[in-house]
Length: 218
Image (cartoon, rainbow, N blue to C red; front, top):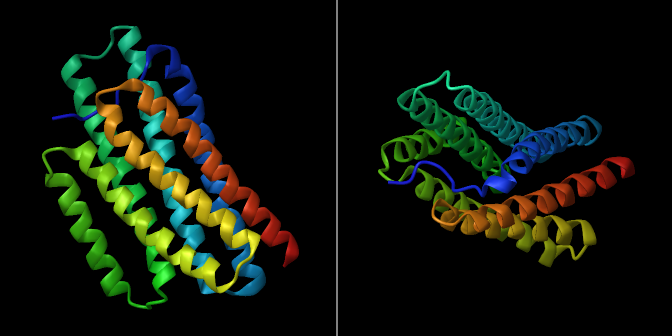
């Protein structure tokens, strides 16, 4: 049973920095989406923004816990059992918030207005995530499936309106899908984690730049 990613020792400082960067970038994406909502009153922009804010919080929690736990490990002020406990709490917190964020974005793409249905899917997926024996692998697999649904939506949007902004966001989500497929293998090989972090950074930057350009046109 794997509960943590394998991260190369030389990359550890970078992954903390990138975790903070992911949290900041996804937060800005969320803020810009809400800004677009205020200008256009498009419900989709509002829900998209909320989804990315949840993803931002998930990265922030994971990064803060990583910094705190490993600083205590280095100073020998935490037991291995306590470290494992908080690692699992961090994994659950990040995974649940990230999945809710993706579900929120999918909820936006469907156009359905049913909070009851939305909450039902969240509850079912959280229960599945908590009780699955291979938590980390299941989280990455589940994320990959959700990204496929998001990609399908933006592919339809691009086919309907062949605009650069639609193509760039489609490419960004395809890259994020590849990232989470790659992370499935990072529980045994650290190099996969390095590749995933780099691709994630590129993907989130593409989404951010795309939203900034859209907001300036409003």
